[in-house]
Length: 336
Image (cartoon, rainbow, N blue to C red; front, side):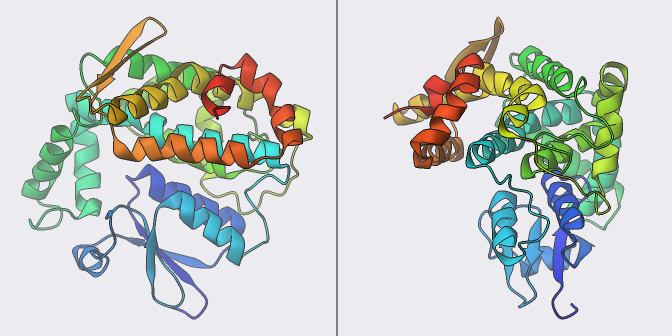
C-alpha cells in the first residue's frame, strides 16, 4: 500500500462498501479499492463483528463500520466535509443516514432473496466477491452456498411473507420521497452531498441493479435512478449547504416522515421488546403488519439518536421541533 493511501476492502454487492467508496471518491481521500478475498478475510478476522467493508489505514491497521469510519475520516481530513455545518441539520443528516443503513437494507434484502430471478442474478456475482465459502472461487458450489446462506438469514432480518407488504410499501414511499427533488446537483441538504446522501446511495444503488427493484425504480423514479448512478463518483461536484429552512424541507422532510411513521416506531418497539425479554416485536404501519425478533444493535441505534438529540443546545432543538412534530419524529426523540 502506498504511503498516505487507504485501502478500502469490500464488495460491489455491499451497500455499505459502495457507500464508503463513493464518499471517499467525493472527498478526494487517496485510497485503493480492493475486492474482499479469502486471504483478506483471514487477515481481518480479528474485527468483530466481521462486516464488509473494512478500511485499512495508511499505518496498516484495519477498522470497520461505515458511520464510525466516516466520522473518523472527517477528523483526519477536513476538506470537502459531508457533515452539514448547521448542527440542527447535521442531526437530521445522522437520523436519515441511520434510516438508510438500518431500514432501507430490509427491502433490499427482501428483493434480493425472494424471487428466483433476483436470487440467481445476485448470487452469481456477490457469492464470488463475498468469499464466505471454502469452495473454488466462482464455482457453482460457491454460488449455491452463498445463495443458501443468504436465504437462511431472511427470517432473522424480517424478510418474510408476513412482512413483505410493508417492506415493499416502504420502498415505494422511499422512491416517492426522492423523485420530486433529485436532479443533477440537488442533494438532501444542499448542492453538495452529505453523509446521509451517501448512505442512501449505497442502498438505492444496489436496488437500481437487482432485477426486481430496478424495474420498480425505473418505472416509478427515473430521476432517482439517474441520481444514484451519478453519485457513485461525485469527485467533480462542488456546492454549498442550503440555509436551514430549505435544508429541513423538501426531500429531507419527506424522508423524515418515513422515519416518524415507520422507522422510529420500529426502533421504539424493538427497544421495548428487547427490554421486556420478548421473543417477537409486532407493529402495524400504514395498515400493514411487521414482526420479528428484537435486535440488540437497533436498541443502540435508538439510544444513540436520542443522545445526539439531547446533546443539541436549546436553540437547535427549537429549530428542529416544527419539522420533527410535523413528521411524527419529535415524541420518539425528545424523551427524558
